[in-house]
Image (cartoon, rainbow, N blue to C red; front, side, top):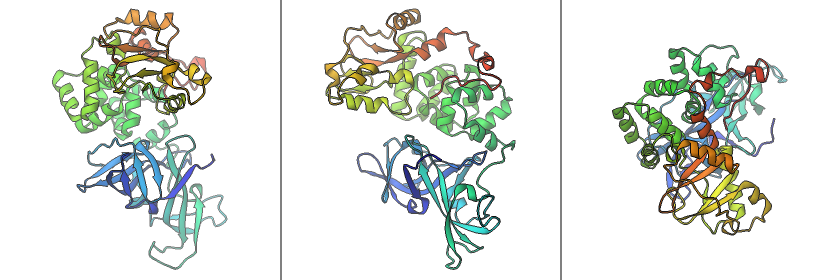
Amino acid sequence: MAAVTHRVFVSHLSGVPVFDPNGDQVGRVRDLVAMLRVGGRPPRILGLVVEVISRRRIFLPMTRVTGVESGQVITTGVVNMRRFEQRPTERLVLGEFLDRRVRLVDGHDQEGKEVTVLDVAIQQLPARRDWEIDKYFVRKGRGGALRRKGETLTVEWSAVSGFSLDEHGQGAENLVATFERLRPTDVANALHHLSPKRRAEVAAALDDDRLADVLEELPEDDQVEIIGKLAEERAADVLEAMDPDDAADLLSELPEEDKERLLELMRPDDAADVRRLLSYEERTAGGLMTTEPIVLRPDATVADALARVRQQDLSPALAAQVYVCRSPDETPTGKYLGTVHFQRLLRDPPFTLVSSIVDSDLVPLPPDTPLPLVTSYLAAYNMVSAPVVDESGSLLGAVTVDDVLDHLLPDDWRETDLTDLHGEEGIGRGGR
């Protein structure tokens, strides 16, 4: 097992306050949401159930948790205030795991002994935001958490029965757990070949971020079918989790009234980015770009830039360079000053200002640049991403090579069988 970077018992999280980066309290932790997995793998922690000031309970994904400190949880500040609804594949740790009577299993010196789960320890995996169950604190015998009698001990997650799925189960829960091992593009390929009914079941069971990643890899017909079968609020949540350019492409395939209804349900900032992309022709730099490149101010350092590049959620194409702009540093930005490539960041000392090493010679793309010229630009300058700048000199976004390829390849390119490239199991094609 990988070395533990951080471990906490869930009883210590119950009721603790949740703060945003500014120190304002968002609410309090009321439970943790877990997903059982196949193959004897430990349950994965998907997020927290947080009770906000209005007493509404919302879901906070672990990907939005930046710190679990003594007596508090820190978030990114981006919180979806829609009411939490437990899905069929989800388990509540405090509500369903604690006080549960189970048995010790093979490999433990007291195999077959009945124990009661008193507490659960979760760990954060090294260099990742993922959390999973690590250990169980149990009491021998049938006593509940309030009984004082009986020996207590801490055991590995694998020593306790009842917290993993049957490898050969047929329910959506098992299929989703199996998909967890795959890249989004491979999950998309599997979904594409399921029946519409089965595809809808699996899509409903996936969490929002995972479904968003998978939708980005599906053909347009499948995207429209899946998003159309989701409840509208859930569909809006998934669209928010998608890259803005992919969300815009999907919404452009919907009837106008459906598109507007979903945009109204999205968070205003997310909807604004998507509306801006929808205002451009599809096969232009503006229609192809993402509105979320790495943007830094002139007084940022190489160390600041490398910290941004290291973010796990970034695609390789977006992580290949940073764009230096005057304030504001969210698109559309202030004046665009130039680009700093990743290799240049590796060559200069950490304290170097990015403004001193910026490449300002490369002419950026106007938003109305047609697709053939965008392709020629990337090829001519050996770029994997290019800045898109408006007439006023503000950075609007960046066009990446993967988005260009999506529009150059035949419509049925996702049907290509790549198994011959890597044996019968196929290969992973992309993902993050």
